[in-house]
Length: 321
Image (cartoon, rainbow, N blue to C red):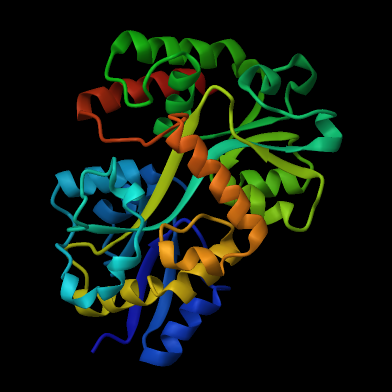
């Protein structure tokens, strides 16, 4: 029997009591392996000897791994807690029957900022790139996320395959690049918390975490629209024990456990049965985001042709200093 479950995630699990409870109940210890970007996660999965039992990855990487047949087909007999999931999270993932992955947490890309530094609310991209904030801005170094936001700002789909649209998004970034202090890799909230930056483009959950203890930190979603990011639990085709991996996934989908993870991480949960157990402040924020998704202001990233992905990468390379 597997005694150690290897988990690949962008979020540290060392301080998550729910995961510790799983280990206590099953005798299976969890070893976390962290990545900063989806590109880095893909490299870990395809170029290292480490085998992972469960991976937590976001939309576009899920699509790519499925396309390349790197994921195991899930045994639903091991996953009775699937009944708790909100159908909203299957709309755009191309896997409505959860054959390969299970939605785990979600967030919205937006603006985290320090109110005392900006002196006003930051509601749109023009607010962000006010000359007053030059060299105090951080942008994520994730090709599809940052290019997707620029496409939305420029009036296009964040999944566009049109070279002209991709060029327009690149040109917009180039027009504001001299105001950006740094391109960040999953530490945006820390830079904001340490006053190294005044405005960061970041996931809602990461900003809400630090806002819990610092009333000066605010989070808003761009008026122009934004990206809803769903992180999913998947089992790689080469996992040491698919059965133990599925046991872990089903454990996480228990409403009480999903709620505990959401309350601690400040990310949304796709678990409908967990929502009444989430604290009122977080639930209010999540309801606001869901309303914006229903109004057509939030978009899900989907897979693009490899040749188009290369256009995105080439465009983003031009933007970075």
